[in-house]
Length: 246
Image (cartoon, rainbow, N blue to C red; front, side, top):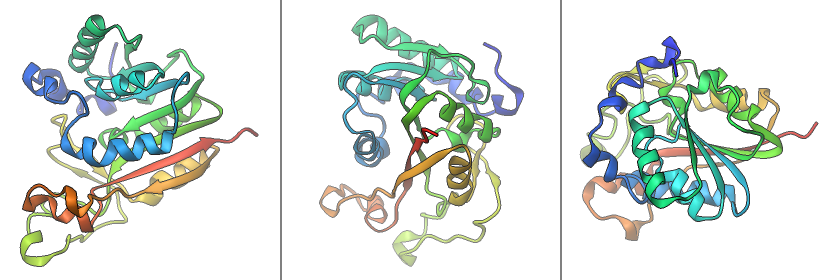
């Protein structure tokens, strides 16, 4: 599928990711996802057994597979052909019933909705044209369906944690304005936006907010000094909302 020019830059790096790195994300993603994001996401989703779920920006498919293990009927979409090839290869071996499709979320099209839930895990911050992407995720929900999305917490900027051992704080000099942050995981930039931008857009799309979670690491889960900051300052924020029925 053709990738929309506004979002193409963020996909380039993902298309050359090696097999070893992709395989290393199984079964539960990187430590940030396994320790912080996954528990928050599944806590906000509740029981997904028998529910239709769209994994929007599924990447190599780890979350799609976790959803399917919990009994969900899953469609995973992503803009990167490389990441989807890995996801499809695992699906061919495991036969969990997951359908993967190449889509740019900003022009999603028909992916078999409506869905009971849509999850966008660390996705919108990588998308330049994020408002249509969010609108398409809401549009894929049935009335009363739940949207759960996660973001890098906007209090974080590049290098903000590097002085934690000496300062005990995260330094932030610009919060309210949107700006590009170079060196995103896909090779292109990701984007700092204030949390209010996402929340107000979600409300404006006809959703009611259910919860906003800032997951932190339990002190007993700290395995090295670099993780100590995660006991005190959230690395991520996870938002749950429901599409209004009227």
